[in-house]
Length: 164
Image 1 (tube, rainbow, N blue to C red):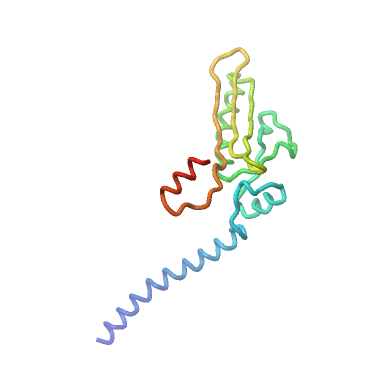
Image 2: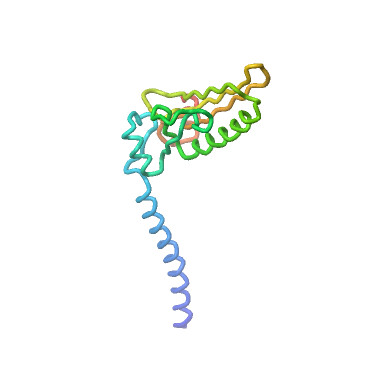
């Protein structure tokens, strides 16, 4: 009976220990890698603020008009975006580079769209065409959309989405 009890107690403690240990480790990783406070994109109004978020990996720097497509290596050509937006930007730039190299496109406009005083664009629009006509290439990267607080209900979420 004692042996059976020990096995039962040991079995119940073991999963608890396994659950607690990874949770504790995960919390440490999250706390070390997260910004000190939550942020809203609309409140990022200076490069210093963006650089602090850059250090935590919340934002990354990219060339708005890529240097491999003729953009300048100039601080005015650098924008801060989320890591996901940077990936989408790179994918679009890769497709555009193939069009430019194949002489299918020879005019390119890359236009950021901002909300309020934020230095983080909400969207980046890509428009490419050829002077002699033909099909236009249009795509956009959505960086962020809304700074509304987390919704408590689905209805609140829908309302916030409509406002943004």
